[in-house]
Figure 1: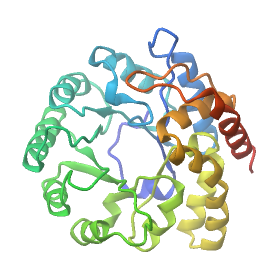
Figure 2: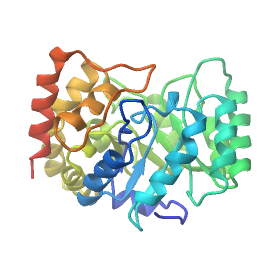
Figure 3: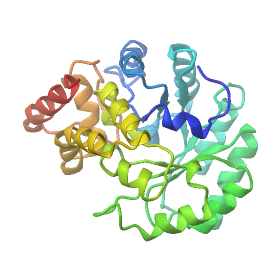
Figure 4: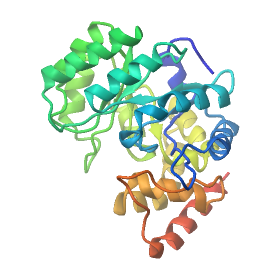
Length: 303
């Protein structure tokens, strides 16, 4: 596992994969199937993985956190960056900080929530977490009202942020006043597009974001890597042609539920058995399985 700090250059070399977390029937973490998922992603050339929303760490037990960290560090290839997440509750993130500070993970992401919080309170909690683990954390901006561009800039300027994961969904990603303000105040080389392949090229070209995260990269990592490479070399026609091939599965994720559909797609495309969803989530309807299976299997075999 990579133990050195995250650099901006890494984002031009690898998509940041955001995988599900496979579980056994009793909801315990399944080492075997998580290793299968990680090996599949690494085999496609991806060397950065982030365990957050798609892994449903929002509802993970703090008591299993040490087991998760041990799994990720043990299974990762020597040059693979593993980023776990913490929170979103303050108490959870500080308990998880006690576990993290004894490990060599170079960073962790703070999961966002707008429930019972204020921006000054968030910034204080973020600072407390970073001070506790003695390394910068990933700031995840998922919706308006969580933190202002000015607040994000303050955290970055104080050396608390490894990078920003920007994931506010817009009908037209090219029209984004918040992101305009954010890149004006924070160096875009510190901001990663956080919503998959669909807005990635716009975020990387118009707003100069440094790279992108993806869930569907877990199905076909090699294809997503080709899209990233095309954007980096400014072959936008090639990148656009690749982007379109992710649309069928992404449309299902948007129509049903992004986390739940990706979780099922891992199983239905026969990459690994992702197992049951950790409550408070639940599986998708059986009637949706044929559509998810068809889209995932079609995406998986594209060269």
